Image (cartoon, rainbow over all chains, first blue to last red; front, side, top):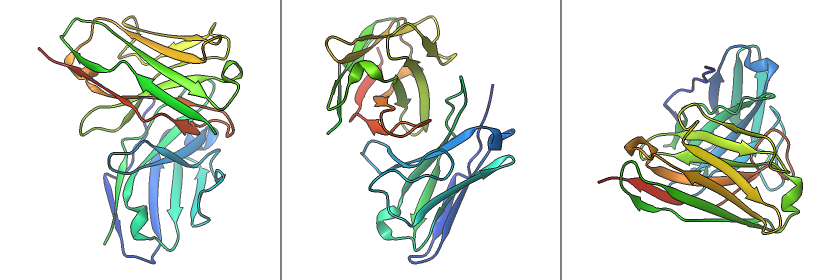
Length: 106
Length: 119
């Protein structure tokens, strides 16, 4: 079965850039998206189709996907960005999630 | 505005059954694929199942195949998940989600409903 690997945790200082990676076999051949989930809340889509931002998502969120790795980048990280982040891979039948990364803004 | 509201969660004994519902509003329900995703306590998000717009095509995670059935009633704008032979490791918050505006992603989520399987 297909697996996506994320680092369990990433720490960043306010105002700095946070990068969260998601690795999977030939992930670049599939669509990657990213969700943010804060404690006690439902997930929110922040990036879809590798690098597109849904309406209402701040410009500081960006994404890329190539080779075996997709990356979520948060520029100028704010305290409100502290959350769990999940990548997801899509193709004709695949809908698998990564294990999630806890982003801590110190 | 799109709204998804899950219901039907609760406490059930191992081997028991439960049916979850997801009431949709704010979009043309019958035109879009719908999905179930769960998150067990202390664990990450896991895709459970999806169904196409007319209900004729479904798919399931291996962990629930043969035990769970996804369905929809487009006249009632409602998505269902029939869960049979429940096990302790099915304990989770279950979310319904839709793909309405964005492609290849879940752009709207419900608030979730908690299913606890325990004796």
